[in-house]
Length: 149
Image (cartoon, rainbow, N blue to C red):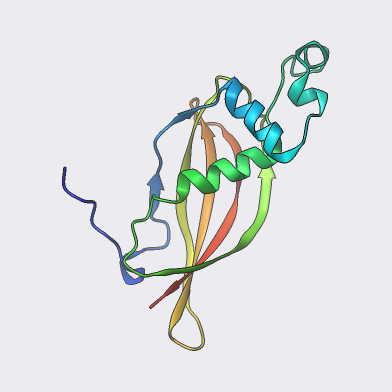
């Protein structure tokens, strides 16, 4: 298989969209994330409790969706420019809960791009949408990336 063409900052266009592969969420994902974060709230860890809630089942922590969206988007844009830093996440919203057996993927849209004042670096504004298999948005927000020129 041929290696994917690497894009430069100049190749990126505002509105351009990249889509990740799908990922089905599992019981193991929920358990491991609970262990990693120490968040064992009953809505995540107690099936009996979760059955009494409006959703009727356990759900993933909201921060799991953020981590998953960032991870699934990591290789979507194969850049020639060296990545210098992630600049943060903003305007993140939780639209619908993630549960075991949901299949999700990330849609990354180039929302903004600009060269910094020193002319040696650039910022790429990436709008990330974590989508369920029915195309509904589970979570979305903006994650900026700094690259060298």
